[in-house]
Image (cartoon, rainbow, N blue to C red):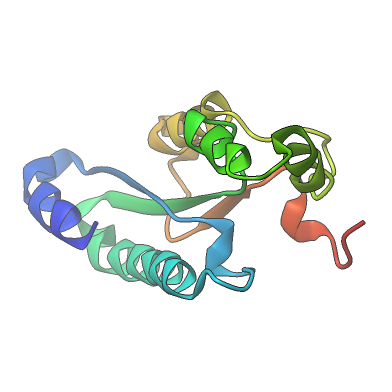
Length: 140
């Protein structure tokens, strides 16, 4: 991510631009067994804030999106690794106050907004899109 940003920044030129990094809710709230992943995703948030500061005078905005569980084929593969995939899916779904997993479209719409002129005053920020998962103090 750092190397991509480093290569892209000079290409933006005088008109500025937008970088949207994808992190994860694991950057701020994680579970056992995700140490390396959580550290990596937390690093993305630090990179996002530092780049936002360093690129501001070049009119380049830098933000991060931290998705929660997104319903993708990879997620289904994860559930399929359990003896009862349907039960595993329901078990993870109970952590989402909206009652559903996110979709790639949900994340895409947020990224699209952040890249648009409607977000022209937003930089150095993290946007958590997790269906309310990290808002829960205690899980059901």
